[in-house]
Length: 360
Ligand code: ZN
Ligand code: ZN
Image (cartoon, rainbow, N blue to C red; front, side):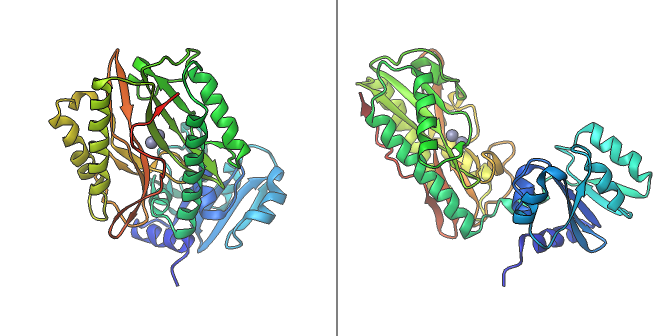
């Protein structure tokens, strides 16, 4: 039998010589304990047991959701779970998430345990487990990706010309919800013409003109799992230069997809796709990383970037491959697919066409 998430975390604690680990953050808690509420903390491995802390507002929710492997404890006040957690700590080396623990909480913990515990920075242990998805998670992400494909069909069939970026973004998020999503997995991007030269452009109250390229970057959240897909389309004929840049980005994207396989680092995959754009003289116009992991959160491990991509890809990772070329004052093109890393390479979850579409 494959070890449970909790068993794998216990093994990670042993490997890091930790006696216990404080787990926080909605995605980590959901992954590990099943709890989907907002106020909670888990303490894994303390005295050989695993505890979960929340407040009275969530008492009935944990009765339904919490993995019975956790012993639950309800704090009386609505805020301070830290006191209950500190009371459960006997001693030893206790890992905490040094990237998200506030200075205030860290100081309070120190006061409460009064020197009997050695706190050890241990960010990323649950995140590392989350990076390798099981088939049930992959099915949830695939369903979210399919919903996003359907939104693209719907959006482009309705035409973009003459409508504003913001109107389109609002409408597509509404349509996502009508089709079952709890919402978008991040604020939708609809950016036309020169505005698309900003990779994270916010939709404006500006009508889309004929002859412009429009970059749409969207994802839905379905059953807790995110999807992420970018397509750039043309409203009417965009002209030769736009077509050339579109073809270049697509070539780089296909190269990136071909580079994805277990054992290769995110940095290597980024470099292989980036080379296509650099060789065409546009290296300086591709200013972001090639991709990122997607799961319960829209940006998670592993990273496919030049600077943070040293981790080797593993089968079960779900990542984006999203090169772009951004020409200030003129246009932007990005093409993004969501893929599963399989033993034999990338399995693409994004199904919407990557031919340059000319829409109304
Ligand atoms: Zn995206
Ligand atoms: Zn992305």
